[in-house]
Amino acid sequence: MTPKQPLFTTERLLVRHFYPSDLNDFAALCADEKVMRYMGDGTLLPRAEVARWIDICQEKYARRGYGTSAVFEKESGSFIGYCGVVRAPDRDFDELVYAYHVASWGQGYATEAGRAMLRYVFAHSNLDRIYATIAAANSASIHVAQKLGMHFEKQVIDEEGMVVDYYVVERS
Image 1 (cartoon, rainbow, N blue to C red):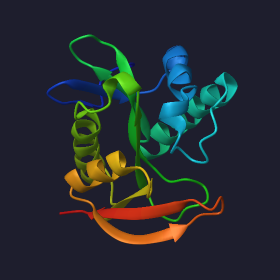
Image 2 (image 1 turned 90 degrees about the horizontal axis):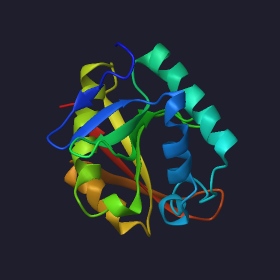
Image 3 (image 1 turned 90 degrees about the vertical axis):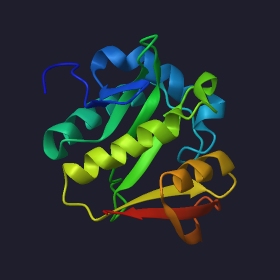
Image 4 (image 1 turned 60 degrees about the horizontal axis):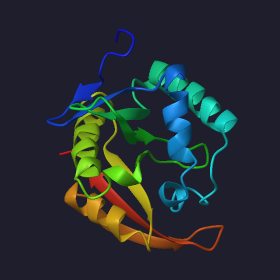
């Protein structure tokens, strides 16, 4: 893949790897309380942590060919969020992750990018299953997972005491 070439496009979106030049956009997303509410423990990420995350993303791309990717609206060229399939260091499974600027919520972008990301990763990996771990209170994200064909597998209480639903989709 040449620099800043799309990983894939959809009808309305362009999805590509993150680059250091995306730091301002990515940092702004990760500094928004509404966006970060259900991400991890809900902590806002400082700029230095976001820069480190971009470095980790680039390592994952080199090693696996996919990871957390930047999502742009085609028409405006605006950065609207991220979507990807990752394996956290403390997990033994790969999971679909996504987050979008509040102004992009409710427009179907998470479903559109998520569907294409799942298709891409299943086509470029040997994964048979991809999970989504979603705070049980995050009904919008649960709705996205269901629209992506994911089904509920289990509910757990995580180490912070948050109730988390596990959704899964299998290679078809």
